[in-house]
Amino acid sequence: MATSSFYSSLFISFILFASSHFHASEAAKPPLVDGLSYSFYSKTCPKLETIVRNQLQKVFKNDNGQAPALLRIFFHDCFVQGCDGSVLLDGRPGERDQPANGGIRPEALQTIDDIRSLVHKECGRIVSCSDITVLAARDAVFLSGGPDYAVPLGRRDGVTFSTAGTNNLPAPFNTTSVTLKTFAAKNFDTTDVVALSGAHTFGRAHCGTFFNRLSPLDPNMDKTLARKLQATCPNANSGNTANLDIRTPTVFDNKYYLDLMNRQGVFTSDQDLLTDKRTRGLVNDFALNQPLFFEKFVDAVVRLSQLDVLTGNQGEIRAKCNVVNPKKSLFTSAVEDVAQFVAQF
Ligand code: HEM
Ligand SMILES: *[C@@H]1O[C@H](CO)[C@@H](O)[C@H](O)[C@H]1NC(C)=O
Image (cartoon, rainbow, N blue to C red; front, side):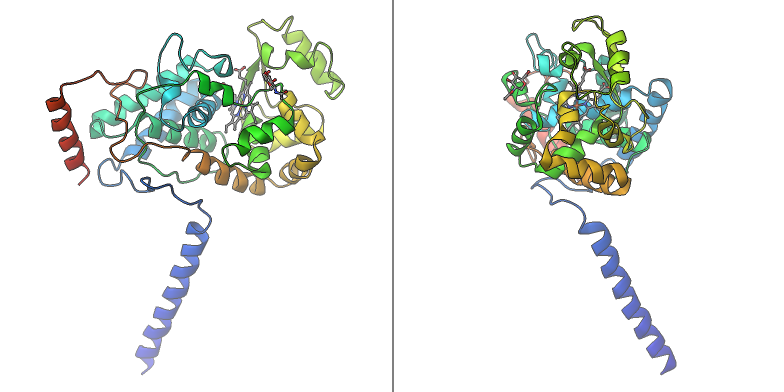
């Protein structure tokens, strides 16, 4: 009797534990797009996430600027014809040499392909460059002090890029009204825009992206910051750069919002978030509450990572991240497709 009630209460507490655990971790995750899963490579490449994280730990030790660079590459990949690795492709003219992609750091592109090489050595050519880009961005955030979060995987690489698509990227000269529309076009709301802008809590900007606020001087910029930026930038074409977050330029934290509250945002698109009535309250909230910022950032960034993805047998798995695979005979590609299909089991 005593044992059976012991076991039944154990059973009940197990159910309670299991269900509360399920709610805490699962309910918070944004919905999955068809074809992606959180365990996509768990059988075929179990070491994938360890390889990415260990490699980035090494890379950031020598060059922590690659962390913000990787997060921006991820954003610019996903916002232009989806997370398909299009921004990684070489081309002249190409997607990457368009004005909106100015400042992308070549060394961070190299890091993505270096990781691709390590992963393919371990598991074969089954992991896409677009998935590696998503994982690298996640680890860039976490290893810089930000939140850790699970990302859905299973993206395939595209075989095209889009130069025109880069016109849909947001511009630093735009006001919040314009930025909100740019993001609404891809189903991101006001909270998403303020949270995603928090990515400017680390990294740098070239003079041309904020010179519009120096000459003529934007009265909405803190005088001390203005003098500092003017000293950095003799003109708009100077190749010099300034930190996006003057307080903690290499840390992923909520200090960016404190910058905005002190009129120390770098871009018009940053500082206007405090001026616009629709976004001001959220800037305040995130400045006072880092866990809230992290929660909203993760929610938006996981949805961003699922924009217009290729899955199943769409696209391909690139053998090198900067070029599409060479065309093959129908026979060779059929044999490879079968091999890749079998490798999933
Ligand atoms: C809200 C609209 C946005 C605008 C107008 C914008 C614009 C820019 C511009 C002009 C730069 C400077 C690039 C350079 O001169 O090298 C930059 C840098 C950066 N952006 Fe954004 N961005 C926006 C949103 C985002 C989002 C959503 C993310 C990621 C989730 C992001 C991540 C970054 C990062 C990390 C950097 C620093 C890059 C580096 O240090 O190499 N940005 N952004
Ligand atoms: C937003 O910025 C871009 C790039 O500077 C500019 O061409 C465009 O006119 C701006 N949009 C509006 C509505 O001001």
